[in-house]
Image (cartoon, rainbow, N blue to C red; front, side, top):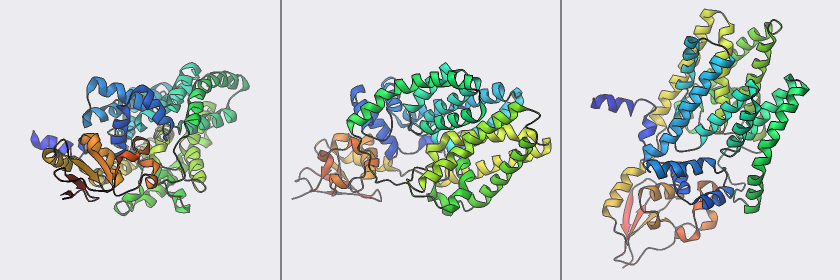
Length: 441
């Protein structure tokens, strides 16, 4: 039994469930512990809307504050998103139960989706609202669609690109009557979202030009299908040199199945309409975002989690349009790419184990001592594991701290420039997670 649990928590995506909390997750927790008013004010000054943090606030109130509890909220949204994915296959593609389960495997095996299924961030929740909005959009249930758009916008600002892809599709394919119904419902969503935008502008967000997202290059355009499918992060490049050949294979697959569908579009107008939506969703939108990023870098795979789902639906829709043997072969290729990258991710995409060093410090520290971190990235995680009133950033000035580390939760009072006077001690956590105990005598 012990070997079984050791396997699932070291060799499967559940490894991400058990790892130490990292900076962004700690920020999510600390922000969610504020009052409702404070959450609204702080998120208005940060880079993300408040809905996820508000939900996490109530989630931790009722279910606790452990690492597993924090991450379980994302896991629930992963399951809900998988269900809507299944509904897409059944009710929009009109697949049999068996075939729907067959293609649901692509969703479950996708490395980007199950990575964020075990992270205390808003991306899986965003994916759920994005996918559900597409579902109601295709069903022309614009009342429920408008609700999903509003909730998505309050979860992540990249919901704007989901909305844009749907509008682009609508102007290409649909009648004026349908456009009127759509825009009436959309207007309600926008009017309800407008107060939040005005509130954000009034709060003067701290977001500035300092950012970590690098500009893409021309090679990135070739890599785009592989990036969307796997959620590839550049720090794994030397461990995953197959991204370019896999991307070329995906380009060939997309081109082949697209040609097969275009050949039959006259025989089935609905096929052409649905195919166009999927193309705009999973190809045109990320391509547009990448092109924008040549000027203003905003392309980050996790921000495009909705396009990953769109690409999986594109495969699920187009593969059956080929010969049965070809369909199975294409499915195996995509599944193999996903699983191969997932294993590399499980092995190498590890969060720094700040939990263990925090346990040691917590066992030694007394209530008068302080904890200093020499790197601001470790500030929020250590606040999660140790009394946050005892944790400080050491040897930095407040002005040089980048906003994207969660600066809205850091004040000048959280900065320390000198050691305490003995008998008070400072536990100084270094960048490599070793620590020393120092004081002035």
